[in-house]
Length: 272
Image 1 (spheres, rainbow, N blue to C red):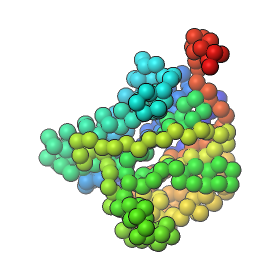
Image 2: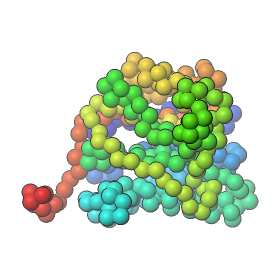
Image 3: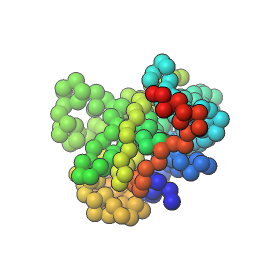
Image 4: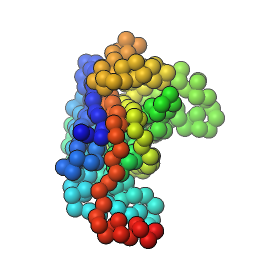
């Protein structure tokens, strides 16, 4: 049985600018979820988000097959899988930016991205832009990512309270996105995972339309049915105005998933 249950739902306005994909590695252990929300016009936004998801998924899959996964990176202190995920997103940024410069129909395109790699009882979270990751642990519901947006910067500087920001109509000015510049800073964090955690990846089409309390209530009500939760969240966003496309990926941790280690790793571990 898989240690992580997954469902996704997508809602449309007149057009869809999203890409979402799920990777289950051949070992059955690592699970990678990627959600990208494109911008820059119908075709361009779709191209950018598609490039992001395809590049990230393929590069992480390839790296997991050939690279050493245990140990920490000396420069950052991050686990090796975190570096793999970060580098895949950086590569996607370069490809999107190069494409926007060489293909006139793609000029100005970009995409937000939020990705979660479940590995060794941890959630490795990487994001750029205002697509979000939420976690429900017991009765505590919290946002694990911080928006890269003008509004969030104003909150951080004390110009708005969190409550005022939630009511603001100026939520869509992102300060960071893939493909806009030759380089981009990827925010990456590692979180311990507990059995029975719920995780929600979503585009701003959900978070702008539905209050956190309502997302929490929906998961608590339909939590045993991930597909139902996803569809209900999309429906709520549409009922509350549906000003943007909505992408949702729901995940439920069913059991622990410690990484498989080589015999040499185990022996070295005995000696601290």
